[in-house]
Amino acid sequence: MLLKTVTLLTLFTLISCEYTKKKEVTLAGKPSVYFLIGDASINGQPVSLGQEIFNGDLIETGKESFLEVKFGKQSAFRVREESQVTYNFDGSINLNIVKGKVLNILEKNSKYKVRTPTAVAAVRGTIFFVSVIDQDKSYFCACNGTISIEDDKQTELTNLSSAHHHSNFSERTDDKLEMDHAGMMQHDDLEIFDFMYRLDNAVKKPAE
Image (cartoon, rainbow, N blue to C red; front, side):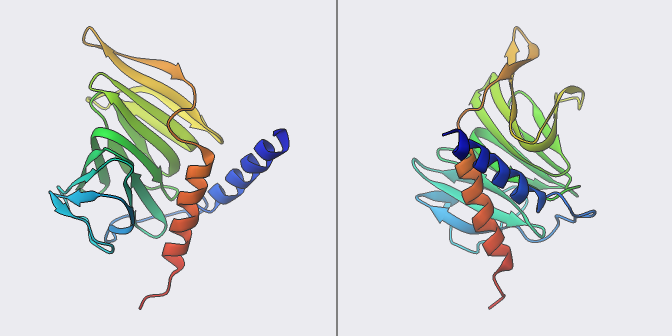
């Protein structure tokens, strides 16, 4: 069991380097759905593979369903089961998670934000996971890299940095927003490996 854990950690670190070695990244390329399992919709209409995502689009997934959207040269986000996520682009990509979970893979120096009802994760290249527990509590994990957790006024609440998972809860209590330590939950390395492997194949696939 220990050998398996060490092997997974080594692979995780090596593969992650491929997503953090580039100096400059532009994420303005057309985001599109490249993988889908189960039921998902965009603006209330069924999703099709290859479908482009536009500013203001609402992505929704059903039970036991998820979809993956790639953009830039080698970046993507996975909208997990029973989620509602709004996509926006204003010079940088912004995701607003109304409910549910999103796993993200970003090239280094990518300008990107994920907003929840309680806080915002601001990043410039990393692998990270965000989950809305409820309207007053969210979960953030820096799986590999660094994320800054901010409030609505862009004031930094905390900075999470790790080569292998560093997590916090963001919780609103009596109109006060507090950060609290959290363990790894709702995602694992195998899911990340699966996501990274499929994204790598998708970006290497020659144009038809």
